Length: 267
Image 1 (cartoon, rainbow, N blue to C red):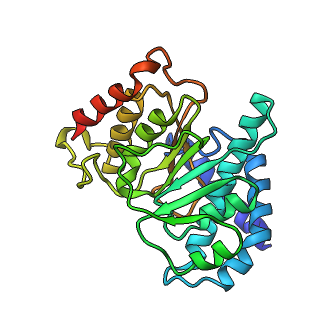
Image 2 (tube, rainbow, N blue to C red):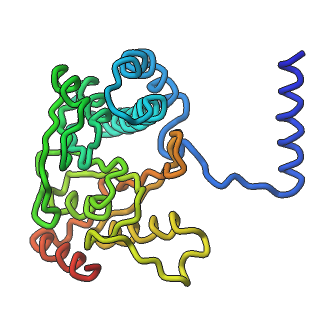
Image 3 (tube, rainbow, N blue to C red):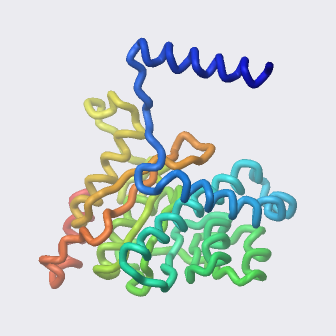
């Protein structure tokens, strides 16, 4: 009886929304087949979630952060699987996780065989547990206008705050084969200060306006942007990454100067 009642409620809601012209605000699974993502998420959740929640040493809520980062790791691992299949390669992608915070995403990706490092300005308590299991987590204050990672396949910015607008630039300057993924959260400009919104462009909301700001930087770095809405317990759930093999390589010799011109424009 309960199942039929719930089914009727959902059917009624669907019919009502359709009749009034309702359209979903976001669409998940734009870049990755839902079945692949859900299969990966189920696997990672069963393998890691229980122990991570039980041994969580941070003051933050493990019920949120553990499952959120498992979801993000599932998305990345699925995306990378598709990338390897498309390129007919077997080597697992390497990565740098900038502004890695608690280091959980770095831990999950390295535990699944991806060579990588997490970098943040300060160490977290739980790093010791992750480092004991082989994760590479480093305390470092980055100079984003200088740093590059030519050996990394991907540069990740998972709610990386001030580093988010810089990551496309860092990826573009690193190599023609370096890709990136960012999840914008807090609103920072390239100057490191809070991003100032122009009144005329925030009719659709500040989060959307900030995405457009990041999109413009990405575009000026010679990338084509892809979007996906992640299945995570957060309202800041938009992933932005570069469409594969779309970097503008016609001006490789002037790549550094091109990107510093971008920086100067926004500072």
